[in-house]
Length: 269
Image (cartoon, rainbow, N blue to C red; front, side, top):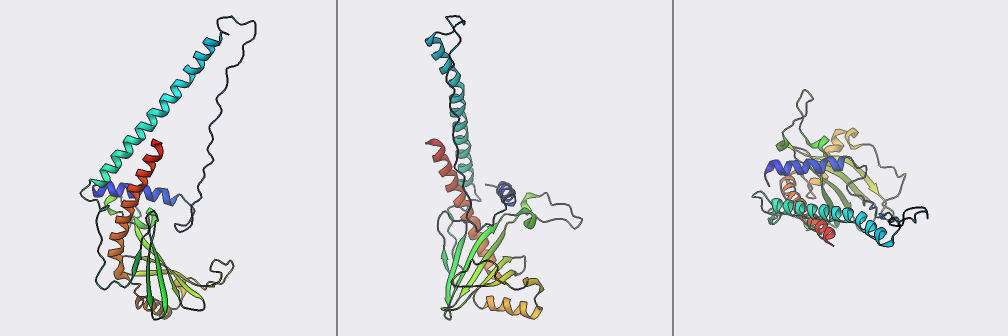
């Protein structure tokens, strides 16, 4: 798949994700209430109708004839969709730029265990550090409003090659007892940015109406720098970006191929 084709697919993903109001880390609601409308039965004609029209044989043939176009149309649509899916899978897998089968080596002295469950949209980095358990849930943000470059005059850059989805993470630091410290982070061009931080109750981390502190951006600058340093010594730093970006793009491509194959299998049954 050429860079332009990959960018076009990412743009489509971005458009879909930006139209959704749910967080990338929340479970998606799946609606499965699809029922077919009942097929109307042939009505009995009044006794005054011509005998040839009211013949059971003619009524049956008309009934079957009325169903044939729908069945044929369904089969044609299903077969067409299967062909398109096959073409898309072939395009992704056989592309010179494909990373679906590429093994991404860990960087030297990488301190984290990588937990990557097939079918999940994110990965988890985990390590033990001085009695603390540190986890970082890493996911890809396809929001074009944040990731597409714009000219200084406000005009959007129409070159799809410039699209580069962002890598974001939710970091939790947990000690054997007490509260849990959580950070929302994303990678900018030259730094790891902390968007928000909060203290969570270990026994009820999802509790509502809990004071989470002021927005990180309005904290005193010295406190912001100290928080960045706090994460850096635990291995959460900007130098992770290049490896994470390559790994997450490869994972996204693998998951995309599996998703296409699952769809094809569903349609074929």
